[in-house]
Image (cartoon, rainbow, N blue to C red; front, side, top):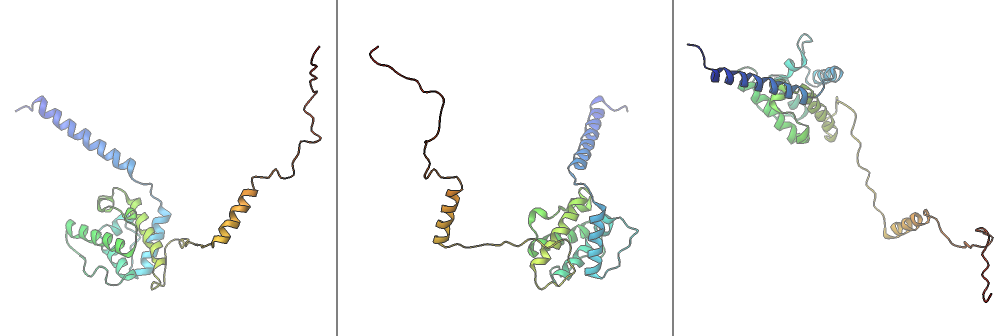
Amino acid sequence: MKPSIFENTGFYLFSIRKFLRHCFNSLSAGKREPEKENEVLEWIKEVTGETISSDLPYEDILRDGTVLCKLMNKLSPGSIPKFNQNGGQFKFMENISKFQEACKIYGVPEQDVFQTSDLWERKDVAMVTTTLFALGRTTYKHPEWQGPWLGPKPASQNRRTFTEEQLRAGEAVIGLQYGTNKGATQSGQSFGATRKILLGK
């Protein structure tokens, strides 16, 4: 039986929708930086002691979440007591979720933590790298961690407190920066010829 025009239209609409979704995901995904990805893998190898195959793509090494869970357990022992080293899609996605939660507890800002689909569906692999660099920065806040680290050490706040006398003295200095008219006169100044006004003539 020949499909109706409505069935064909539905198929075309579905295909267009799928194509547009793919375009949106491609545009919204961050730009990948191979140098940073290599830096992340080297850091993971140093921390975990794991042998990581250079034949596999970066995202495939991280995709099942096992390497991420091992990394987190080295940084914060016991933070992920149990994770799946084999199984299907849902088991591995569960690993990723456990890593994400452990990152937040460790101190990584929530906005820096990637979404599961960013890694599992490869929607935004650059965001995964961003998360791992954020995790590397967070290790500096944990004195119990003696390295290795990833990325430069974040700048620490330098808060200063001032007395009332110091604040008042500062206000006086700032006021003088605008200039002063003390001792200023108009003597010696000429603004052109003066006009003589004669009365009674």
